[in-house]
Length: 268
Image 1 (cartoon, rainbow, N blue to C red):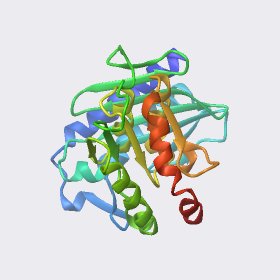
Image 2: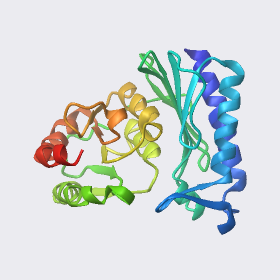
Image 3: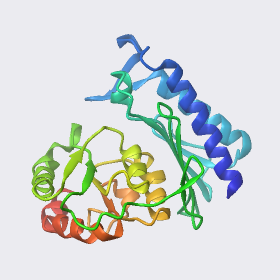
Image 4: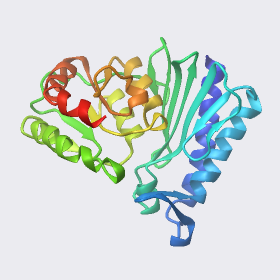
């Protein structure tokens, strides 16, 4: 697994270098619209190509699922899930909260994860069964024992998710009444890395994609945290609607969200 991790690290750093070199240099003409309020730049495309070139240069038979190019390569037991810039809206506004996210699934199970923050040059890594690291140092989820005083992260529904907004806001209000504070920086992959490293005590969001969350889910699990789908009976990575936190807060957070199970089932 170490060889796979080394490949992911090299690819993430290369993509991060491309992003950082072009940071705060994006013009309106560089931005394309994929869907309403969903954007892509030439930097996303160049960074994703760099990741694919490095992975396929070493493992030409592996499959790659990327945000910009979709599936690349024939179906195999090895699936790389990549996001060249998680937080593109932040990026095009020169708001320095974005990252590169790379995960590897082998036979359907997450095995390797890398999240790289080029702005801070922070590298989060994990191999299943070997723990999670930040810049080579072991990390663990927080020890916060109560929702009172906890710091949570989240992301707001938008675009085609407006039908979810009412139930999301009800959950948001429930948490707001109890916790110490809630943050929404705009990069879900970094949010999950922050749960893994104890900067957040917990996190929840609807409507994410596998490339947003795959690496972060493994990081959290390897750092001693818990993750589940907010949609009953579904996989957290595949559903993209997930709740996570340290073991002390996971059940209290789940209890709050579970009040809305019937409404969520109707939406998804």
